[in-house]
Image (cartoon, helix red, strand yellow):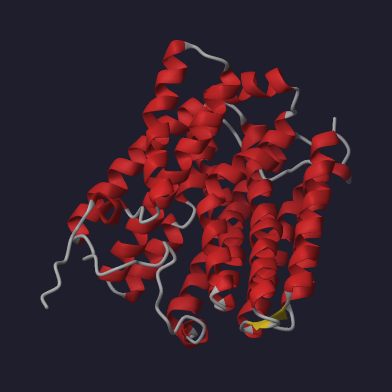
Amino acid sequence: MKTIVKLDLGSLLGLANPVLLWMLWFVPVCFLAEWRGIDPLWVFLLAGLAIVPLAAMIAHATEHIAGSVGPGLGGLLNATFGNATEMVIAIVALSQGLVDVVKASITGTIIANLLLALGAGMLLGGLKHTEQTFQSNVARINASSLILALVVMLTPSAIHYTSRGLNPTHINHFSLVAAGLLLAFYVLSLLFSMKTHRHLYEAGNESGEALAGPVHGEAVKPPIAKQVWVLLATSVALVFVSEVLVSSVESAIKTVGLTPLFTGVILIPLFGGVVEYIAVISFARKNKMDLAVSVAMGSSLQIALFVAPVLVFAGQLMGQPMNLEFEPFELMTVAMAVVVTNSISGDGRCNWLEGMLLLVTYGVVAAAFYFHP
């Protein structure tokens, strides 16, 4: 019997899940809500929900293009666009002068990936599989890189609190130097993972499954040219939706009495990272913890080593100076997340109780930010 192969809208956009496909309706609805001037809280929520399918489309298009252009360029493309959603939201917020919200979203994304995403993956994967394993040597490299990022985040505050009469511009200048060094290390880490020690990372990804999610049926992959157009169009749509989200955030948090710190650390990362959370859980349930750990920890490293430094330089270009000096409470919670995650991932094994430990830690952190004045 001859099989009829079909290319439908869902496969083109990378939204095999019908729920994500229907969530595209939130894109025009959020613009309509802003135009009609309804409650900013509803505008904020609608824009946040609209970001979810757009993030899924960007992830799928990037993965498809990366798989078509070869491992070298493809790996670089994945590494660059891996956190495109977070980057776009942060740049839009930075352009509107919301530097504190941008900084909070950076720390919040790192915390959510390490505690919420990885914790949910270990819990739900551990309930199905008694004990799961992953490559401890790769996890150890990621852990050391996270410590480097934490050291860089701690240093500006250390300079500030140990210096009298410090000129604020000195912190900005240090941040530019540190951002350059972090970007250099990020490039070296790409060289390490894609060239000199590629075998370490390929050993845990022998299945070759795309991070955008499993493909159901026998649908044909759309041509690369169409995926490039999907990526460009989705990125443009994401910019406008992010503007709606950011423009409504200040009024929305005042409506419900939330602080900018809680909104930036807890709420905004949930919208931008939900696709990655789903990917981590999906891989963990399939007993592919190498991929789950790679997505969760790798995303945090991209934020710390690539997104944050790029935002420092972007802020300078846009006349909205942003440095790497974070609030002490934010630094403390990032340090907690890094320490707890590193202690669990060091042996290359995990179970559902360790996943629950990460989730409880995230719950404590979220509650602390909620009650923080």
